[in-house]
Amino acid sequence: MRLQTGPFVFRINSPLPKVAESLHLLYDAFPLAEPDAFADFHVRIRISSGLRRVLRPQSIFDLDGIEPFKPLPGKQAFALLEWGMNWCIYSHAHQFLIIHGAVLEKHGRAILLPAPSGSGKSTLCAALMCRGWRLLSDELILIDPETAEIHSLCRPVSLKNRSIDVMRAFAPDALITAPIPDTSKGTVAHMRPSATSFAGIQDHALPWRVVFPRYREHSATQISPLSRADTFMRLVDNAFNYTLLGTLGFRTLARVIDRVQGLDAEYSALDDIIARLDALVAAEVAR
Image 1: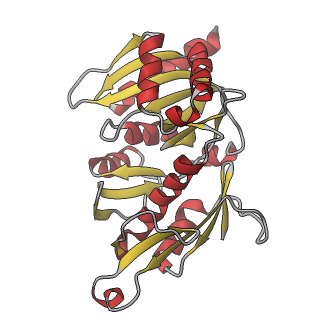
Image 2: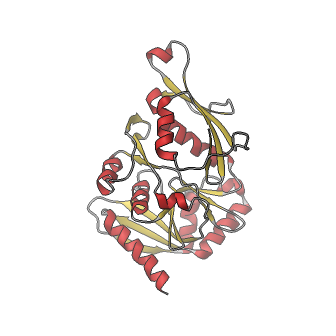
Image 3: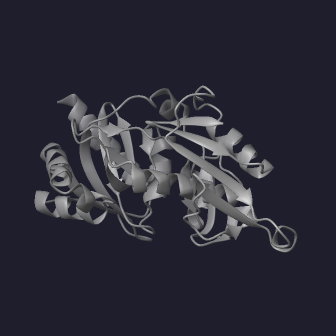
């Protein structure tokens, strides 16, 4: 199948029923490119051959016949596909400045949530999506150097460990796949993007706020402003290809900083932090 995911077409080949089932559950509303259309990435997920296929099956990801990762247990095949698709983008799509983080939009205002693993970024991203924010991306922020616009990638939200149960309780009607245990990131599952996010998959957004989230158990919600210099450097710390782009990377990020306010956000209750972010947008719209 040739799957259109934002600005990219992935040609995905796999004989594995579990991979097909997960693609159908999570990507059924995504557009498919024509069979003879150009594909940016030709990827394949398969099970190892030989005796290992029977005794301890392993899943293998390859891009154009190149295997960039070590094989993983067979039951982790779909998670490996998702991670591999991310790798394809941040390793090759240097027409964008790419930052590790989520990005969502409401009333034309896009917030960037750059953060390292373990900060609670994906949980907050999923919760905002379930409260009416349009998901542009959970993992990769794609910034156009020419316009400073954020391009939508809108793929499933990756949930890990405790966040899986948190989101099942927070949004019981959301479609979340069965957990995959014992991965390098712990137990993982994926949440299907919302209908609002699908509807705007071709729509770009201009950055408005950069929020650095940090979950801390039992803490009160606190949002504090950051200087432009601090915001700039923290974005650099979360960028995949800032150094590779050189001067273009600097100029692109400078254009973003000219448009945004950086915020540090500490929270423990999802409803509280969402209410605070909704209030910021409402105040801006009311001006």
